[in-house]
Image (cartoon, rainbow, N blue to C red; front, side, top):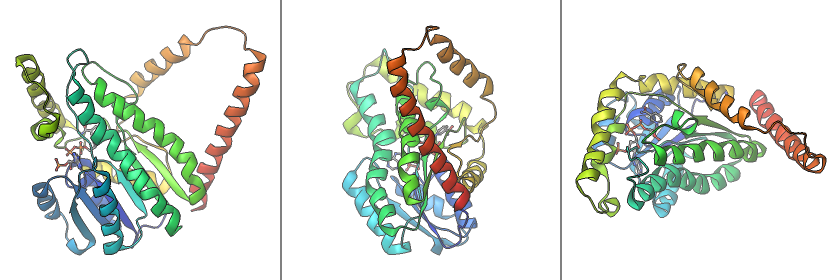
Length: 305
Ligand code: NDP
């Protein structure tokens, strides 16, 4: 996608942080933007950042609610016409070491972080197919979708999944002229530390002192670290550039080279040093060449559009 003026974007979690950063950059590029967010006060606050409020349509949406997502898509189209850029960005984070995590922790993060992306895709892909004007999908993963650390296993599970499905999506959507990027930020100065404050009662589970302490950790630790992060508007600018270049990976932060290298070296080193099985190798070569072709098509599409 090279031309943004007059095009429409739909951003989940657009009322705060990275989503709002993207919305501000997109509006400056001449786009009409729908910001969908779960809290009205964040939407109201977000609207104060726009000089051209007529180019922004705020709406309440819980991304884990499939019917609400379908209604939101219809509303977006009624207001601004076909959606060209979909940003599945809404997300939450909690620190919950896996030895202490309960089903309520898993269900909450899976339903918002991964469920939200799935619902966005299942709702909007037919819309992209029907309007046939091409476009771009950006799914927000994280550095935690590439390397996992202690205490963030559930979050990492959702973000690894988003990265994996985005790569397949990239190949599947090329035929419609729709590019796909996966956004993998490091630390960004946002409200992510407030996730736990808004945990819905249905995901409360049984709370004892240990759980209470773990839950308050999320706020305390992230509150210290997040303000040192990148400005969300800078992330938004990098996303716009990534869409223009049809980059699959949008990596706003430079500081992870060594860690990635270590992690991928460990994977490669774990491969057995054995002769290849000739029968298996035939199948693997077919699979590899299918992937190679799909990748070339996806890359070519970006050069053409
Ligand atoms: P923010 O909390 O500032 O923004 C997250 C947004 O998602 C908020 O607008 C929030 O709404 C919204 N949201 C939460 N739950 C729902 C829901 N059920 N339905 C709809 N909207 C919802 O944090 P970030 O900007 O940091 O987070 C954006 C994305 O970036 C997330 O996917 C996060 O995992 C990812 N990320 C963030 C990093 C960081 O360092 N900040 C690093 C790597 C990835 P509300 O404001 O109303 O609570």
